[in-house]
Image 1 (tube, each protein chain N blue to C red):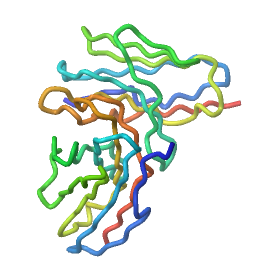
Image 2 (cartoon, chains in turn green, red):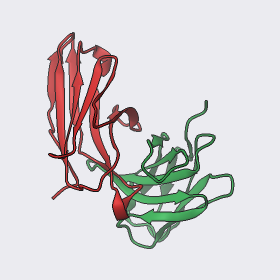
Image 3 (cartoon, rainbow over the protein chains, first blue to last red):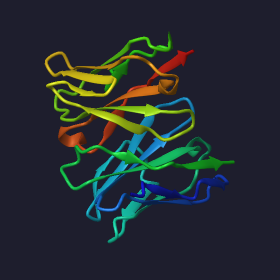
Image 4 (cartoon, each protein chain N blue to C red):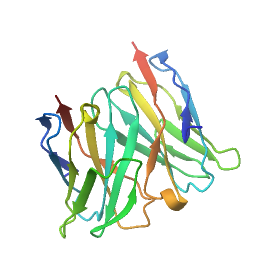
Length: 114
Length: 112
């Protein structure tokens, strides 16, 4: 069974640009979650999508946004990039449920802002 | 106060040793609990879910004490391949349902 996939693996942008990160969940999973892991810091929750709707949002500014498509894949968009947005962005997916199921992580997209 | 507080280690143990990790969580509304392992510069991988009754998976045993909001992981007969960072993880619950809160991780090195 294929795991969570993410693209691109690496992304280099300059300050002020926009970045788009993509995630495909495990087949049969309807929920997608996004996390940020900055260097030396723990994972921080960004967003949770389920059945195409945003269900919960972490303490990040509005320039972090996303969406979930009918096939349950998801995009994370980061506008007006800042240097401190440089981090590993991890996507996770889980099966149908109330948001308390096990989450399975993809390999991540490493975003570098220069 | 952090959502999940975890013993930072590091733990350096010989092969075959038994090692225990502990963590506490602050949100009494949390409903699900996990241990993940993370290898250097890799994504976290689910090791096991943690239930109130305690659960075992081979050499790994996890315990949850809801009253004291305490979670533990015991690894018996350590292998070299167990070397990794172990993350105590709690689902937010209530208004923060769906959010996983991660401890800072405990680094384990098993030496031959």
